[in-house]
Amino acid sequence: MPKTISNISVDCVIFGFDFKQLNVLLVERKLEEPKSKKVLIDDWTLVGYHILEDENIDNAAARILKSMSGLDHVFLEQFHTFGNANRLNNPKDKLWLKHQSEGFSDRVVTVAYLSLIDSTSVSLSLKERNVKWYPVNELPELGFDHRKIFEKGLDRLRDKVRSEPIGFELLPEKFTISQLQRLYEEILGTEFDRRNFRKKVLQMKYVIPLDEKQKGVKHKPAQLFIFSREVYEKTKTERFDFSV
Amino acid sequence: MPKTISNISVDCVIFGFDFKQLNVLLVERKLEEPKSKKVLIDDWTLVGYHILEDENIDNAAARILKSMSGLDHVFLEQFHTFGNANRLNNPKDKLWLKHQSEGFSDRVVTVAYLSLIDSTSVSLSLKERNVKWYPVNELPELGFDHRKIFEKGLDRLRDKVRSEPIGFELLPEKFTISQLQRLYEEILGTEFDRRNFRKKVLQMKYVIPLDEKQKGVKHKPAQLFIFSREVYEKTKTERFDFSV
DNA sequence: TGCTAATGTGTAAATATTACGCATTGCAAA
DNA sequence: TTTGCAATGCGTAATATTTACACATTAGCA
Image (cartoon, rainbow over all chains, first blue to last red; front, side, top):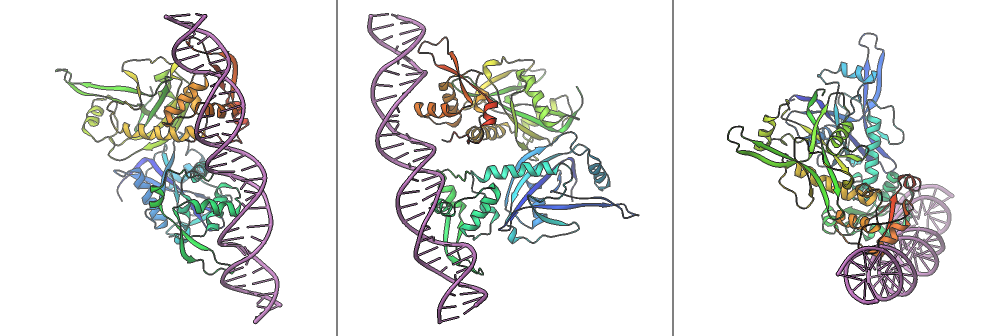
C-alpha cells in the first residue's frame, strides 16, 4: 500500500434498505488492554480511511466503499468536509489513534461521502473487523465526530431524495411500487396515499414496467419495475419532485 | 500570523448583485519576470488562503471573507472540497506556487465556500492585490481549477436559492419587490410574471412591507420591504419554493 | 400640463394535488 | 374445493395551486 496523507481522510455514510428500514453501515472500534484484556474502547464508526498520496479524493472514497461492500460503480457523492481543529480531541479518540500503527496527524480533515447501495445484493466481507448494518434510528455509540457526520449525511439524503431520482439506488434492479413507496416513507418519515403515490410513479416515464411479477409472496404478487437512468436523462425537463 | 497547514486551503466564491447582474469577486494573479518585466502570469482567481494550525475550516473562510470585504456575519457556507491529486499541476500554477514565499505542498486540498453579500454596502479594500467584481457570464481566465470551483458554486447557489430564502442576502436590508424579482431572474436565468411574482412574495409573511418608499427614481417609487429571518424560522412549515 | 416609466391590483382558466371506495389476485387454511 | 386474508390495481370528484393576462396609478421631468 502506498503512503497515506497523514492529515486528510475520507469517511463514508453508506445507506442500505432492507424493505423495512433504512440502515447505515458501521464498523466496530474495539480496543483491549493487551495484558488484562480490559476493554478500553468498544464503540462504532463510519467506514473511512486516509487518502493515499497521488490518489484523488473521490477515488479514495470509492476504494473504501469497494473494500467494504465489494461494490463498484454505485452511488457515491461527497457531501461535506469536517475539519474542526479539535474534532479528534476527546480521550477515547486520542487513545485509539495512539494505538494505530500508522502515523496520523492529530489534526485530520475528513471529507465525508454519501453512498447508497442495494444492500440485498451485498454480503458483508467481515475481514478483521466487525461490520454491521444499523437502523438509522437505533444507532449505537459512535466514535470521533461520526454522529455529526452521520446526521449531516442523512440530512443530505433527505434533501436530495426529493429532487433527484436517487432512491432507486437503494433498491434491487427490479422492484415493486410498494417497495419504492416504503423506501420513500422511511427516508422522509412521511406516509403517502397508496393510490396517489402509484399515480405519480406511473407518470415517470423512466420507471418502466416489466412483464414480470413478484414471486414468493403469500398475497397477490405485484408487478415489477426498473428505473432507467437513460430515459431519465433524456426527459429531465420535468422536475423530479417527491416533496412531502 | 500563526503557521499555516501546507496542504489544506479554503477558497470562497463570493457573489454580489448590483441590481443588474450577478457578480463574483476575483483577485488578480500577476507575476512578472523580475528583470525583464516580462509578464509571466496575468489572470484571476477566487479569494482563498491556507488554513492555520488550530483554526476551524469555517473560521478560515470567515477570516478570508472579512479580509476581502470587511464583512462579518454574512452568508457563508461550505459547498464542496476539491482534492484531485493533479489540481495544481499545470505549468502556470506551478510557476505561481514556486514564487510564493510560503512553503506550500504540491498536493493541496481546498474546501470551497459559497458566500452571498450585499455588494452595495461593500467598498473593496484593494490592499496589495487587485480585486474586482466580474459578472458571472463574463469571467476572465481563471487560475488553478477555479473555473471548476466557480461553476460548482454557481450551481449550488442556483439549487439553494430555490428552496431556501438566501436570495435576500444579496440585497440591501430594504428592497423592492422588483429588485427581488430581478435578482431571482438573474440567478435562475428565467423570467417571472410580474403580477404572479408579487402575489407569491406577498404571501410570504417573512417579507415585511415597510411604511417607506424608494427614493431617487424618476418613476412611481416602489414600496420597500425587509426580510425577517426570525419570522421565517417561526413559520417554516410552508415550504420555500421559487421553482422555475 | 402632459409624457414617461415604472408600480400596483384582480379574475378566470388550466393544472396539479388530495381524498377516498371498490374490485382483483394468489396463497393458505379450513 | 371453498373461503378468508393481505396486498395489488384502478378511477373519479373536490380542492388547491399555478398560470395567463389588462388596466389604473404615481412621481419625476420636460
